[in-house]
Image 1 (cartoon, rainbow, N blue to C red):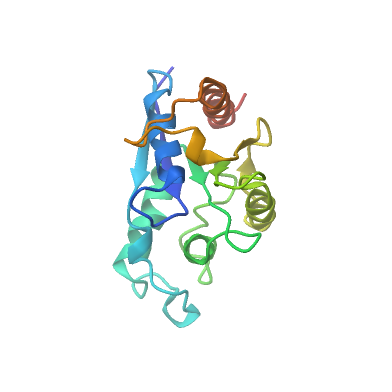
Image 2 (cartoon, helix red, strand yellow):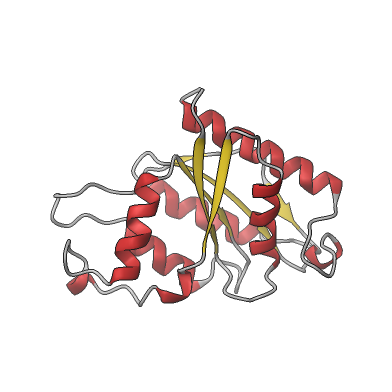
Length: 188
């Protein structure tokens, strides 16, 4: 079988984000035929503006994200929870890549395999944010991985000071989630 490439997007801009660390753990523990590329341009995506949302008019950072999602075999998103929902920067990026007003270039997220996970220091983790994010992907008609749910609660207890995921149960769940994304990407 051919190798797969997944684009990993953290909904957190924070330098020591547990969500970004969760994606690094996914890359570390991924099967040998899977490459997980961490996207680091979320901070550069401007607020969504439909007046600029057309080929040749979009900001360069948006075009780059659209291209990378289109080229990826799947997308892995780690979201923190802000105010019982997803961070605005993450929703904004999804808004930019979920449109094709000109019907000239296609929709990067249409039927794209997508898996969600998330970490938060609270006792509920990112459960509400993940529910909100799942609802967004209903609209984009993405091929969403439903199980396993990887909701890392009390995340500060599951990473060491260097940002390495140390909790074996969470590592196992992350591996299962990546395996489920592989199945979606391979059409199984």
